Amino acid sequence: MAIPNDILSVLHMVATLLGSILLILLAVSLIIVIIATILLIYSLKTGDVLFPNQLILGIIFFEGPIKAIMRLFGVDDSIIDRLSIDMQNKAMWSPFSKIPCDKRAIFIPQCLRSVDCPARLSPEGIVCKDCGQCQITTAKKEAERLGYMFFVVPGSSFIVRMIRKYRPEGIIGVGCLCEVKEGLDLMHKHKIPSVGVVLDKSGCVSTVLDWDKLFEVMHAGESTSKP
Ligand code: SF4
Image 1 (cartoon, rainbow, N blue to C red):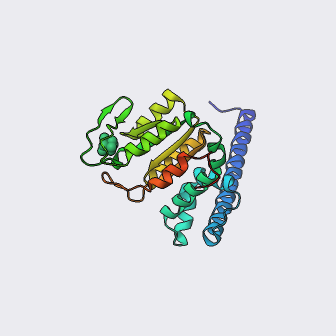
Image 2 (image 1 turned 90 degrees about the vertical axis):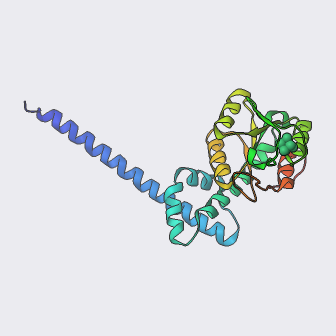
Image 3 (image 1 turned 120 degrees about the horizontal axis):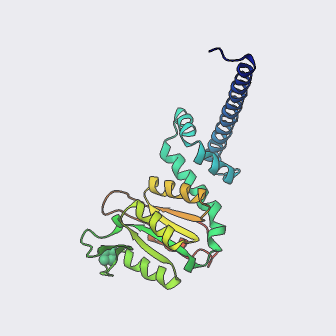
């Protein structure tokens, strides 16, 4: 059965319109990627970050193409991740600092525990027994003194579960570069002010953290220092 000419012309118009929209979206995406890449190169060369909020969004939504272009300039993906974390931390510092400590949560990875840790898993994460074999006990006591919700994380799905359960208004996330980057991107999308602290040495066990850095972030709002 032949399709009437008027239907054919409508279909043709729709296809042309969709094609035009697609081309415009591609052109806009390309322009954003190019601008974000130029801003990143400027930041790496000068140490100054221009338009940090826009740059953060650019990296979140166009991470793949931006990293591919930066690789052409010899810039490793981890450098982009670290810069992105630094920018997000700086951008979030002020809103995070204004949130009362009892509405903030801290998520610590279990790999920071001693290999002889006697703590056991519970529905609320790994419950530190304050045995003193690692620094988690000190961080936990200080966090709880300040009013924080404090969790030692057994796995990434646990964080989402606790956020849904307790609805913290601000978050401190500790982890390796990838975990912190992914966590901050996710919190940025959900508009939860969050600050990330990256492990100095990552791995499955015996990881290393600059605990002073964590304490500095925990006390955000009490001083004017920045991460
Ligand atoms: S201080 Fe807590 S987390 Fe660290 S090893 Fe002891 S029980 Fe485990």
